[in-house]
Length: 459
Ligand SMILES: Cc1ncc(COP(=O)(O)O)c(C=O)c1O
Image 1: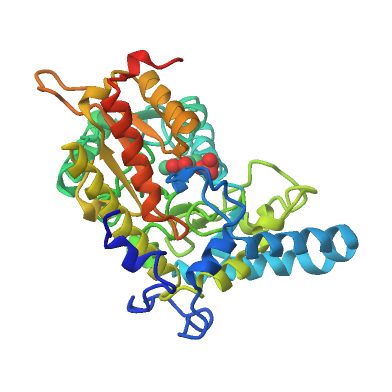
Image 2 (image 1 turned 180 degrees about the vertical axis):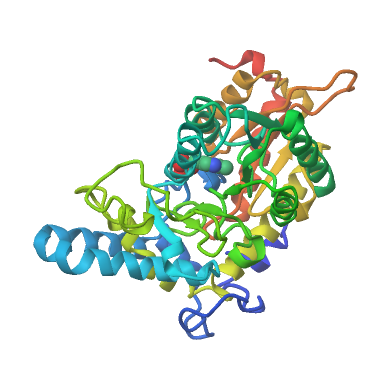
């Protein structure tokens, strides 16, 4: 088998590459030294619960959690079960505060009160969008005032915008993004157009919901530029949906400057399901923090979102408590989370380029617009002509070839000759090996050489 460069900077050497520059972010514990760097076999054993028969190149959907963090989670669960009252009165709140303070430092927030831990990005979206809904119902916003969001916003977030903003009287304008995308300027131009449209007839753009990394198709959005434009154009609030944020792209609240920013911690930050953070800026001079509430109201209602979120009734809070153990895990890698992110990016781009070269297609965006996921054009002869075809191919790859990868259908534009209509979203995380991508390549090559098209695949 051909030796690919990936081997140098991922798993096939005994140790990870220690040449990665250390993180710009505050050091939260001592960085990995040559004596503490995690080895190839230790990484394998941290993820030994993964099904080895599957080439798992879809970290983006559900993330991954190493054994050491799973053990820590079990310890927290046992502490609760051993003496629940002691746990509730003495351990839960300080434990969550500790996790929040680590996140606060990692994302360069001003204050720990700006960081709340919630279950997932969908919950965070509900928190922000319910606040907007109240502004309509309570007369601070006029009927027909606007919320702008990307056409490629995640399905659950789109539904939430419909449920909270549209029903409250808001008008939603979607930013139509090109795909494949060639440059960030294309996105910026479309975003400006949508803001202009929003301001027609004297209406105000009250909210911009912007993905940091879109899910499908996956592209890194020029978030700093878009937030800046929102400020210049007087948009009241900017909510960044960075479900794929921390561990996948740069997440620095001072550099990005959003009002609200959510990132899952279970996707690219090795937490178990399910935990995310929601950042809400304190120093904006607006009423960001005061009127944010967890959708599940409990005893702490009115005590600030972070405190409300740390007790929403009796349940398992262990996923929120393991953040210190995650930090210990990631600090075994050179450069910590920054180093992991950099190596994943380089590896996924390298694998994406290897695949498009094999199939004579192209990536869905330039490498600098990818994080740890890349859209890879699939051979045209597969006949991917609908979302249902894309799903059939995905299922076929899972069931018959042991490859787990999401497939995207792109409707062709009028007049396109032999358009690429199917793309695979490949991910790279520390447990991936070059063979995972070769397995995917070989599976597609076999399907093509057998003359199988999506039309032949079962529903
Ligand atoms: C961009 C984006 N937003 C929101 C979500 C929803 O995340 P969750 O299911 O954790 O709520 C996802 C999930 O993949 C996503 O990709």
